[in-house]
Length: 240
Image (cartoon, rainbow, N blue to C red; front, side, top):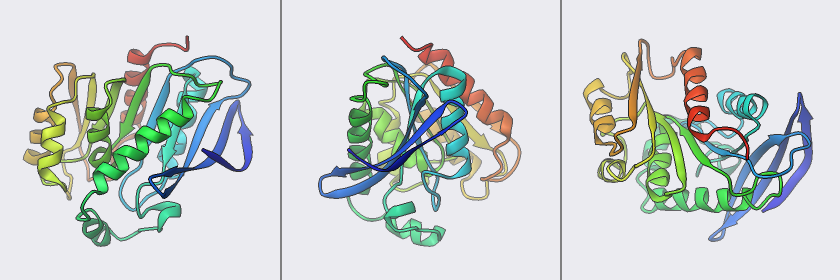
């Protein structure tokens, strides 16, 4: 992990940008920690949606809320072809990019590497681990959660079985064992209701719950973000 630029401190939150080399790929990320923090604390990995990036408003807001309200650390990465890795902004181009062989495995490896690097920081440590990611954040995040037994809680959703790669998502969903909060937009124009419900049904854990809201794919209400914050905190607890 190499730091880029100077830390930014605001309202008790320290934000630090970094790059990470993962199998020859340069992966940009951000880690947020409480100002003056020492010792071990929970870490929440936050995945962004398609055509977005690690500094999109809801990622920044969630990260800062986890730090300020709960004393957690948070980390976000630019997904392949997004943000500093290409600035992909067209949904059709994204769909084509998702067909590249190995892209899911590569991204899962990047999350494993990023979490391992962040947890080496003395102000983070190897505390409880959570994951938050909707839409594309579920395409990449669900396989990561399935592959990482240390993840104790996950927020997923806005994704159905028609997503690429369909078979991979369904198979990985069956391996998820931690508590899961899953979101669905009832009028989602990208994913059919039955397909979203099918992927939720495929999630293997008994500790799962589904929150459904009216509106389109990008219309998740503020109350959903607040509910997801509370759900994560209810599982991860306080810093140790």
